[in-house]
Length: 56
Ligand SMILES: [Zn+2]
Image 1 (cartoon, rainbow, N blue to C red):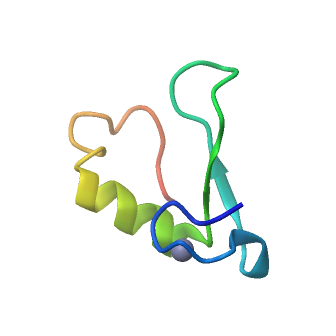
Image 2 (cartoon, rainbow, N blue to C red):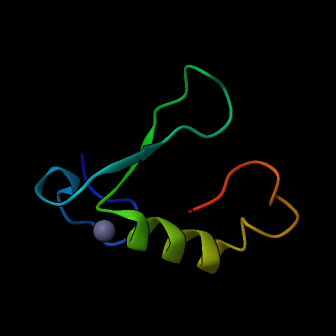
């Protein structure tokens, strides 16, 4: 599965999978937490959503 953020093959790194929305929604793949956090920062998804998850 390609990294949502940078488009690289996530399996070649340290993949992180995130399911957003419905339980049966396709998960999003990221190379690692760096790509995940960069994606979240760019999208502003962390704004007002601090109770949902933490990159730590
Ligand atoms: Zn990536």
